[in-house]
Length: 543
Image (cartoon, rainbow, N blue to C red; front, side, top):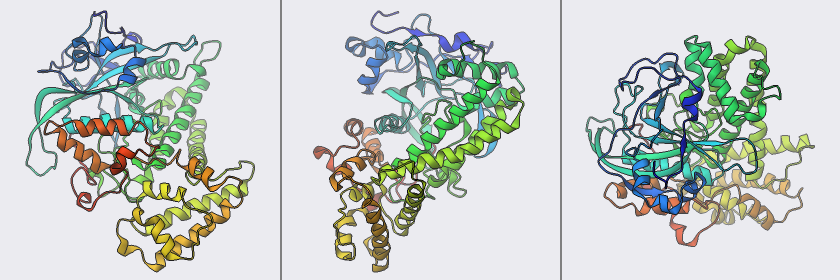
């Protein structure tokens, strides 16, 4: 083992049962949480992006990051001594249908890093995983590789989410491998070779709802119990009683926490206009993180019915405005999975019913912050008024194609002294938020003025100044999001060997709430040419 690199610990594999079969062939894997499998060697390892800040927290030094050992580690070519790479076994519901065993088809975990203690006795670990590292027993008919474009999207989006303050898996590095695979990215029969890349990603836990569902569906209560208790011990240690005994009451507390974190996560997505695109239960994290960035998208014009997933274009199951409901649906499936250990339906049903209340409360608090409203929790009447104000705003924003991100930034600069009866003034203030000026009729401006009038009345009941409100709003309403067309531009340049735009976006998105003079061109609405272009508004699952 190189002295330059921090030590990986085989925590997961030491505490959960392994697949006894060592051959890397696609098969049904029973009574096991994972299968041992090495990454597929690559032709070379060329680092495009490296997240030094994250690397330092994992124990990498500057010297380590410059070393050949590091670049070989994150491409899967450097298997250190005692390293036991593995792919996780889980199932899941896909588009509402039980799909059975799924598992890590192209992700291979290298192990866990022990993080600095920060003065506590609890040991905290972060798992290092390589996405696009080759075939595993769970690859089914796929090759286990990830192409450059999907890897760029994952690297940029996970880091954008992190700096926006949203729970997410992290990206440590983006690495070219020298390999090529055939993909039909437009599903039009014109498949072509594309360059491959690997994203080294990091999380305290990559366990999913499906990690619990699969053993439960098979009646494997031993593995079900082991997996839940591993999650509690490592991700929710505060739930363990002084006696150390994990019983039904602890399982219910764990489920309560998972529900709470799921509600919080989806509220945060709604805050910034993020649409996951594939909220299958195998893509839902047990620790409430954003995981698996497939056909995701960010809302340009506000549209509760928009989905970035072309495979979901007809049903729109995973559309923007339905994410909270899907979160509850997925939690219901998780509740069904742990029922054999609870043996009572009532407490689980009560917690699922509570999810709606928790979500609505969190959503209203979030919207109050977006609007710069000083919430008074003891005044339920004010909350009811605010809820109505927020819902009415969504209706107004839906009347015309309104850029969500720009609208809230412009609303922050709206003065209470503005003469809202003057339509010329209103149009001047919000013009850059609108995609089609021909939609901005006097009737629409009247609707906007009517809402702004209610907004001004609400603002008059609080003590902060317009400037103070602006500062507060700009802390929760980003100036920059990872706009789909900007990612696609970066991808197209990268496929020509120019990675400058990828690096620029990675740097820009570290401070998304702060206006940056040098990056003004990235705080703009989607241009007309990107409206129906692949990767800009209509996205693909092919990766």
